[in-house]
Amino acid sequence: MAGLASPAFAAQRPTVIELFTSQGCSSCPAADELLIGLAQQDPSILPLSLHVDYWDRLGWKDPYASEANTKRQRTYKEMHRGRMYTPQMIIDGAASAIGSNLAQVSKAIAFARKEPSNVPVTLRLSADGDVLNVEIAASNDSDGAYIPETATVYAMQFTPHGTTQVKSGENRGHTIDNINNVTRITTLGNWNKKGNHFELPLKDIGSDGLAVIVQGEAQGRIIGAARYLPATK
Image (cartoon, rainbow, N blue to C red; front, side):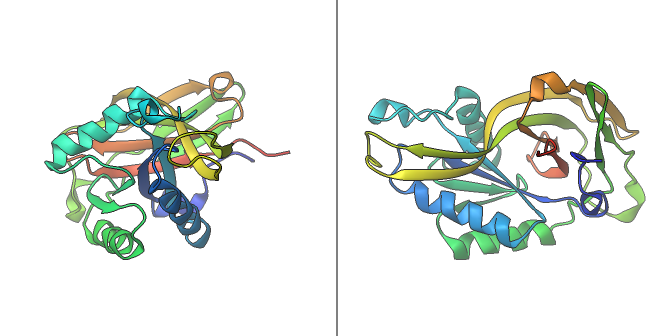
């Protein structure tokens, strides 16, 4: 059935890369291109572009920027006791890197994949009539994988592709391509180790894509993830 999460992701979840970016930042287009390249080379990567709004006051209002994206980056800053900058990539909620630095990003991806955070939590997204069913399997505490005490389930709606002609600010005159631009972040509920089920109206998603992630509350490590893309004509 078109629009389902790939069966491969049920066996081994995708590595989530969140790029905090802005079309008003001259250093960001290189990171935007890097994210697109990574996604093209490695289908096991789930790329998300989160455009922050604190660059908007400096000459160009990013059409994808939102306060919610900035808030999410600020939450990572507090969790990791780190810095808040653009372009910044957060890999699996655990590792941070300068988004335009391939060496740093590659190292962060390797670190995230090495950490025992791929717990047996699977998400099964299936289009069923007018509803998108989100199924999260029960966890298994016996395999030694990292399992947080508490975790939250998020739905992150995104526009799969976007091309923008920037008319002012630091990137004036440039055309910028972005991938998986996050437009809405919704908290679905608390993760239950015995499993969860959520239903999302397909009419609210429309032609957008959706990422569903299970994320530990204390350290922010992502322990489960899947993506939904509507059927293309």
